[in-house]
Length: 218
Image 1 (cartoon, rainbow, N blue to C red):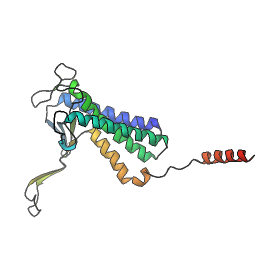
Image 2: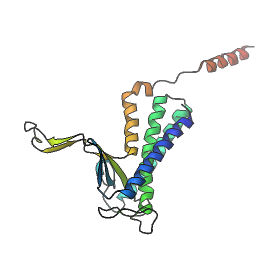
Image 3: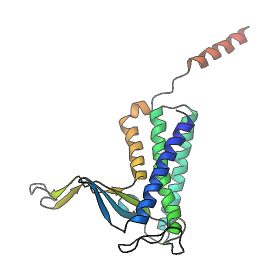
Image 4: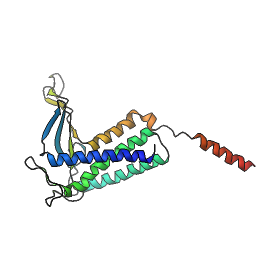
């Protein structure tokens, strides 16, 4: 798999991810939800920290998280470049490209959205590129919107600890960047043998090496 193919995957994910986030941010009130199908909603929330809304406490927690993400993406980028240079499997390069694109998409939110957008509330649609930005550089919130309430109801009473309580599956709200990362990780897990298969030598490389050795003998 060549560099241009990996670049195409990354650009497609980034463009669609950012388009969907900007649209939701500027057209939905905070926590507004629109039912697309019985099992699929567009629901606008923002994530200030890590997955599942986890935060690093303190005034500099968000800054530390953003810088850590940037460093991690740099490492993933090097892994992608090295894999392409060594002509690793298409499964591996595709997976790394998806992970890289997803991580980069969420970093874009963290770095820029605080100064690009106004604050979103239940009563105010956020504007973009106004004087009333809600944050500063490296302190943006990640926009999430995809919700799949596949099933909701009360759990049977015989289930230990949670029996009789309200439950919803699937409860997470995420974005395309998150989906891209999860897909990349899924490829690495379920196609592990193909992804990390040994690199095969090209026949023409062996043949040229044979000619070189033969020339030395002459």
